[in-house]
Image 1 (cartoon, rainbow, N blue to C red):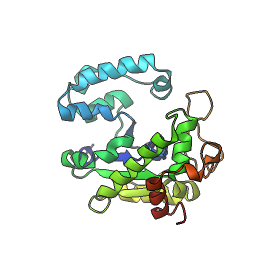
Image 2 (spheres, rainbow, N blue to C red):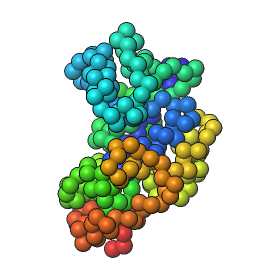
Image 3 (cartoon, rainbow, N blue to C red):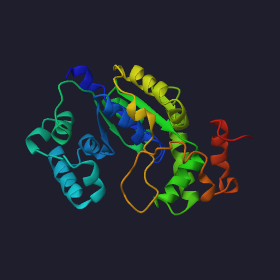
Length: 257
């Protein structure tokens, strides 16, 4: 792995339930090493809270007790000696070594910490994905991530406004989830061009990982990627949308004035 690849991670962010996991599926399908909501891997090291070895031990214990994490990280292997060599070596210990790869991390809340990310990794590639806030909140309610739509909209608005605060001054790629649904190969190609790799497979771009709305914690790739687009009416009405959220829906083209 080149020094340039190590210092230019791919950072994926966006409000929860907006499609961040779909983006890393595309990246991982093309040889990238993007960790899935493992942001605390790097964060404590930046803040000098504790060592990567200790973080790995904590994560291993969490995985052993969490069925959802076991589902996605069943090949988890942690070694302290590699962890102390740094974040990238620790990623190797978790995900396995490859001959050539780019690394990165996906965490929805990176949108609030982009300046810190760029301070540590000036050449980082930032991908922000957004989605109709009404569908986001409905998904949160279906998944019982939130039980109150007002709180859900607060989270969506906070993410959008954080993105708008750095959108014009930080180089990044912004993606609408709805465009990913309608033009998967085109969006996958734009990701490859922005991140600087050759697109070998757009297979995962044909579907968006929506997450199961049933009782099971297992995610699934929907055979109908449009299933949850505009399908918020079973959970909320347009009259439930706060005024500040509606302003952003209008400005982003999701609603009419």
